[in-house]
Image (cartoon, rainbow, N blue to C red; front, side, top):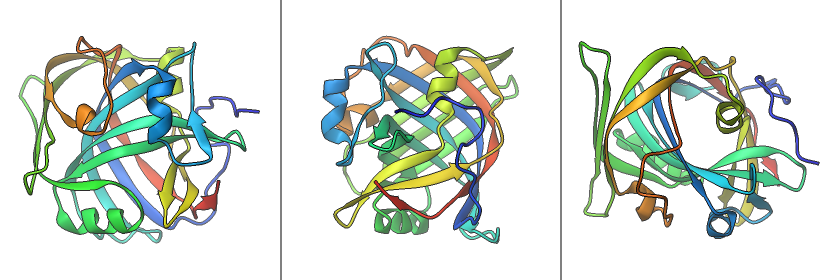
Length: 237
C-alpha cells in the first residue's frame, strides 16, 4: 500500500547524519508518461503517479549550512539546480530520484558522487532583483552538455492545492549506490509554498538527463523561501 501524502514526515529522523538548509527555491514541473521515467529509476522502485501521469521537476535554489548531523557548517552556501523524478518502492514509501544535480562548489560535488548522486560541477549564479524576481544561471564545467537560465517572480498567494502537496511533500529519496537501491529519509517543517510566474526559461538539463517534456510552459511554478532539512540513515529498498 502506498503511503498517503502528508505535510510532515511519517518517519521522524531520530538521528540526523546530514543537515542543510534549502533557501529561495524556484520549483517547476512538467507531466511525463510513466513508461518514459521507469528506466531512469533505481531497481526496486516504480514511477509514482497521479491521475495516470508522473512528473519531472526542475528545482533551483541555494544550498546552505551543509554539514554532518551535529550542525557544524561544512560546505557553506552555494547555488544548486536539480532535475528530479517521483518514485515509490515495494514498502509504499514515496520519494524522489535525482537525475542530475548541478552545484557551484566542487567539494560537495565529489562527496555527492561518492554517495551515488549524479552531481555535476557548474558555473552558477543566483540573484534577486529589486523587484523580487529570482534569476538562476548554470553551465557545466568540463564541456559536458547542460545549461540553465531561468527567472521566476513569486506571488503573495499561497499554493495549497493537491498537486502542490503531491509534488513537494516528499520525505525521502531513492538512490542506487554500489549496486544497491537505498531509501534515504528526511524531515523538515511544513512547506510554505507560494505561486509564481515563470518569466524566462532556457535549459538543456532535462534533455541531458534523458527526459523529454512538453516544450510549453510547466504546469506548476512555485516559490518557497526555504526550510531546514535533516537526513537519516539510508535503508535498503
